[in-house]
Length: 214
Image 1: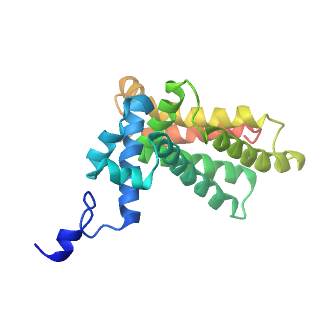
Image 2: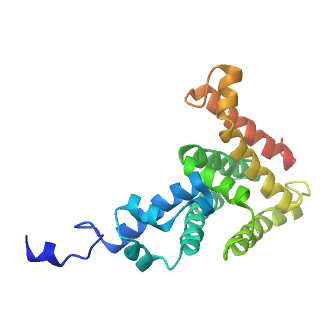
Image 3: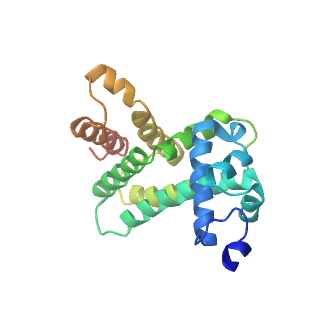
């Protein structure tokens, strides 16, 4: 055994940097929280799946709650990046709405654990974890800052930002989650490009009508 191998810290794969280990923990945790919820997920289970020791996990995250909040934050960061990228383009509000809602649909379709994590967070109920309120308030402020100026310019109809935010979130999540119903009714699911494209377009059209942009 080489000296480097003998002195390597237990639980950390050879050649893996601290950042890579942290990312692996987050990926495993996000999937576990999505499938089992907060209460059903154990730190020991996450560590085992990530191929590290529990003590190594605690080196990166002080508690299961902190890891849960970070997993949620990771999903929100991806959503925020999509929205910010769309806002940075010189396009009208109808095109902006179409791009953002379509990108959200694609993100959750391609990352089912993101979809399931949102539902698990709602189903778990009970006391909210530290950070949940801040995330919700940040998103509300973001939506208000986007819709407010457009409404004052007369580009969209007056709408409550909370209702709009929850409506779009619910539409995207529920349609993708209900793929088995599409399969039963149509005999085809979202692996069929036509079914997925039609569903995506339907969600976009509902968002446009809600804003008075149809």
